[in-house]
Amino acid sequence: MRPFFKSTVLANTQYLYIVICFFILSRVIFYLLGIRFDANSINFFFQYIDPVLLKTQLLESTYYSHGQPPLFNLFLGLVLKLSTGHEKIFFAILYTIFGFILSISLFRLMMRLHLSPHLSTILTILFMISPSSILYENFLFYTYPIAVALCTSALFLHKFFTSGNLRDGVVFFTILAVVALTRSMFHIVWFLLIIFILLLCQRNDTKKILAAALLPLLILLSLYVKNFYTFRSFAASTWFGMSLSKVTTFMLSDHDRTYLVNQGKLTNISLIKPFSAPKSYSSIVPTPQKTNILVLDQVVKSTGVANFNNLMYIDISKQYLSDAVYVLHSYPKTYLKGIANAFFYYFLPSSDYWMLDLNRKHIDRYDKFFSVFFCGRLLFSNRRPFHDWSSIKSDSLISYYVRKLLNMSLFSVLGYPVLLIFSFFLLRKKYSQNNRDMAFIVTIVFLIVNILYVALVGNCFEFLENNRFRFLTSSFIFVLFGSIVHYSFIKYVNIK
Image (cartoon, rainbow, N blue to C red; front, top):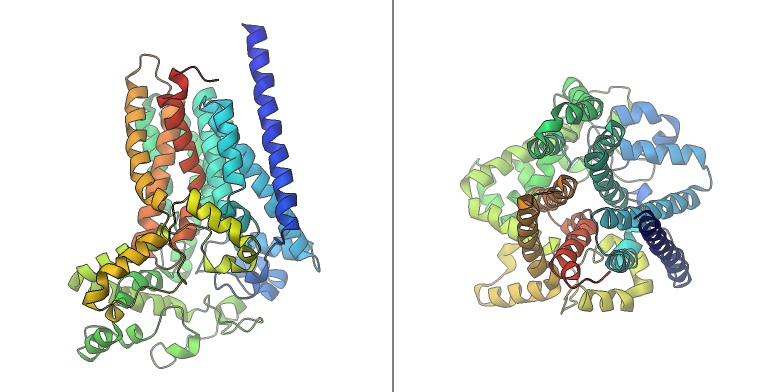
């Protein structure tokens, strides 16, 4: 038994070496094709604090940042401070390390779930060389680090339920806290939901689960308490109203919004696109008093773009939220149209995100090949926002939907529901076994919950960047697919 175990470990190590070699080789090849790290976003993304403030007033600025959780800006500031003049190189190195961690974590997760080494290796390589992985790995935004963190958290969750080691549990919940402190989509409710599901699945380990979650939860809770105390907003971001308005109020035509404003049903703010420059709101929202805190007082960043962390945007977002709630209540069909449009964007290939254009042009043919043969995309029309429903004539509605459908990743549209359904059957089968593998069950449940959470929350409350959201849990789809293939076919035909 021991020699067999040693030979198995050795074989698995050899597969790991294959994954590592493919990672290194693929990154060299894509570099030769022209892929370079894109750090331009640091100058104009509204999620980022002014680079000057990140360098000179990092702690104060991140503390008073109400539009975003603080962790990613803190990360940006530390890199800017430590790599003056060489920031792009530092970011490129760090994101390559993130990519390596993601690839290894994905492979190890599938191996821990006892999938075939061949299958695990193939799926990991396929994921790591996909255009989406390459493009997001070379794009300065929090999308890729969060995708890495989620995959790594699943690995430590399985280790926690396999070993029962409290340290693995603490690492798991700490990674979840890092995700929630980076991206406001992952609300504290999401964190509590994960705790609840784990307690439900493993009631015998209640004390150990709560002990592992306690400190990360308190750290996360402190952000919400701080925001409530400072800004009267128990949230990780004060921009929720502006985001929701894009799926509700701004699904109405310009004519309908103007009519409702004239009727007093909506406020004048509904005539201004959300996330507009401060001067657009000068006649609607009074200029807040100076706080002598630059990140709150600054109207325009040193880079020349608007500072959406200005204190005025708290009131602006509240007004957008009030109008959005009215539209939700009075025009529910409009909201359903907004969600439908969001899902159309969600199921576009995640590489088809307009901010990736700078690098995608170097691998355009490869991206299209991948989109056709691995995503099932049949049409490549020019990207444009499809949210002005008033522009759609009744006789072109069918062609509108057909065009949108053919642009989408049809394999994802059809495959996601099928994969989730088969995953539920697999869980049921595993749970009914005498020797039930609870670590496997809990991990698969964790993957499913996060896939559904990102899809529902992302598409119900945001619009136009939804396919970028889908990349966050794309590694989980590979794991679910591998699990279904292995336990439905490979295991029973004795393929090693």
